[in-house]
Structures are given as structure tokens and as C-alpha cells.
Image (cartoon, rainbow, N blue to C red; front, side):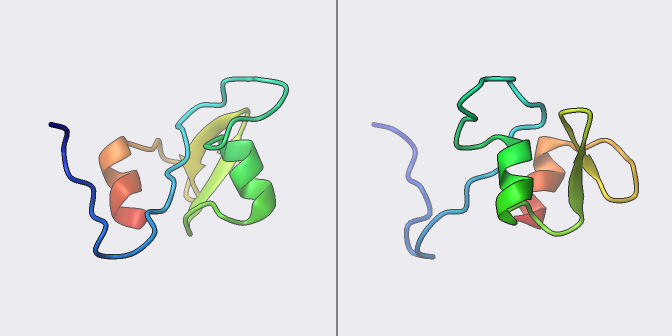
Length: 68
């Protein structure tokens, strides 16, 4: 029915959202929470609740999938 996930590689990494949803409990993909835990992909950071690359450029979902 649905699309097959790549289960052969083991556990899939959760990708962070591109913008924080400002929920008090912090969702599982919150970029702020992932930054604090150290699970954010290398070369990415969070500024003003928005996920950005370390060099300051905007993030696209396609680039984010390649990095993770």
C-alpha cells in the first residue's frame, strides 16, 4: 500500500524540521531539541528557531536528506 522505507540500512535517522513549531513539550523532530542532544546533522545549526547551515545559507529538504 504505502511506500517502502529503507529498512535494510537499519534504523532510520529522524530529520529535523526546518522551523520550530514552538510547542512547549518539544516534538521529536524539533531542531532546538536535536541541537541540544547533539543529533543534528553535521554542518547545521539553529538560529531564531529556524534550521540553517553553518555557513548561514537557507536549508532545503533535499540538502538535509543528503546530509543525514
